[in-house]
Amino acid sequence: MFSLDSRLHNDTFFVCDLSLCRVLLMNDRQFPWLILVPMKNDIAEIIDLTEKEQITLLKESALASKAMMSLFSPLKLNVAALGNVVRQLHVHHVARFDTDCAWPKPVWGNQPTVAYETSDAQARVASIREWFEQNALSVL
Image (tube, rainbow, N blue to C red):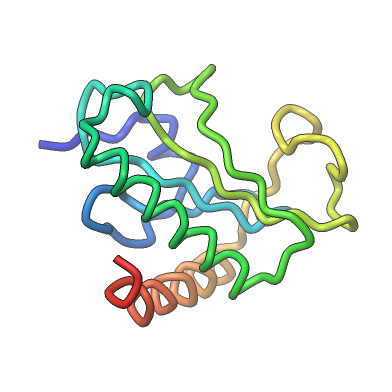
C-alpha cells in the first residue's frame, strides 16, 4: 500500500491519481504549484524506478506541465526533483511569472508560504482535476 510522506501530506491538497503518480497541489497561493509523487514506496531517485516507470513519469510530468501552461499561462515553468528535505521522490511543477514575489529566484526558502483559503483551494483543485479528467487519456 502506497504511503505518502507526512510533510507532503500536510503541505498539499490531493488533486488526482494518474497511472503512476499522485498529483498534489502545494498549499501556497503565491504560486500555481503541482507536485507529482510516484505511488511507489521507498523510492528516492528517478533511477530507482524501472525503465518503464521512468518513461511513465516523464509522460505524466509532461502532462502536468501542459496543465500548468494551459491553466495559468506562466512566463516560465520550473520543474524539479530535489528531495533535499523530503526524501520520497516527488517532482515539483511551479508556474512562474516575472511579477511573482520570488522572481527570478527559486521559490524555495526565499519567502514564507501563504496558505490558500479553503474555498480558493477547493476551486483550484477542482479546475486542475477537471483539466486532467479532460486531457489525461488523450495524452497517456
